[in-house]
Length: 271
Image (tube, rainbow, N blue to C red; front, side, top):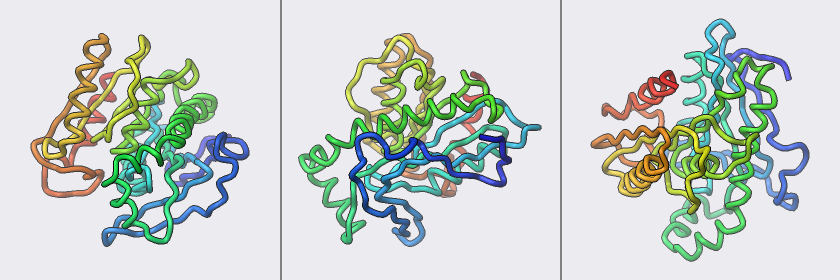
C-alpha cells in the first residue's frame, strides 16, 4: 500500500475475503439520513477502514482509529467519523474511520432501534453473537494499521483508537482485550456506552475519557473506567463537561463541548 495525501481518503478492506464469523451475511449495506440531517450507515457486512493520511511535511507519525457510534445498529459516519478524521489529519495525525459490524436493521429503521433499546432482553439477545465480531474488527484495525505503518509514515508504537458511544465500547474493549499486534498505544472512549466486563490488563494503554454531566450513562461509565484504570496504575485523564448531552460529536452547540477535540489533541501531544 502506498502513501497517499489526506485530500484523497481511500477505503481499505479490514479483512481479506469474508470477515470471520459472518460469512453468511449477504444483506446490502445502506446509507440513510435520519433525524433531519444525520447521515448514518447500517447493515455493514464487510468492515473497512477509510484512511485520511496527512501531508508528510506535517505528519506527527501518529495514527488514530475512529469508531463512530450508533447503538450498535448504525454508524454516525460523518459527525463521529469522517469529520473527526479530517480535523485530525489537518493537524498531522493519520486517521482511519472504522466501519465495524452491526445488528441487522430492516424496513422499520430507525423506529426499531428505539424498540430494541427499550427491551434489555432483546438487546442482550441481539448483542450476544455480535460482541466477538466487533471486538475482532477493532483488534484487526490496529493490526492492519501497524502492519502498514512504515508505508504510511506512522510509528508502529504510536497507534491508538477512539470511539463514540457504542464506538466507545469498541474502543474500551480493544484496550482491555488484545495481543501484542492488536494492542493500542492509547485509547479514547468519548461518551462511552459501556464495556463488556473484563479486568484491566497489565499492559493497558493510557486512557482519555470525555463526556457531559447531563449524560448519565456516559458519566457513570467514564467515572468507573477512570477508577479502574487508576487502581491498576495506568495513566488516565477524565473530562466531564457540565452540559452537552449524549452524541454531540463534531456538532456546534455554543457550549464548551464544541472544542472537546482540542482537549483530546492536547492530551495526545503529551504522549
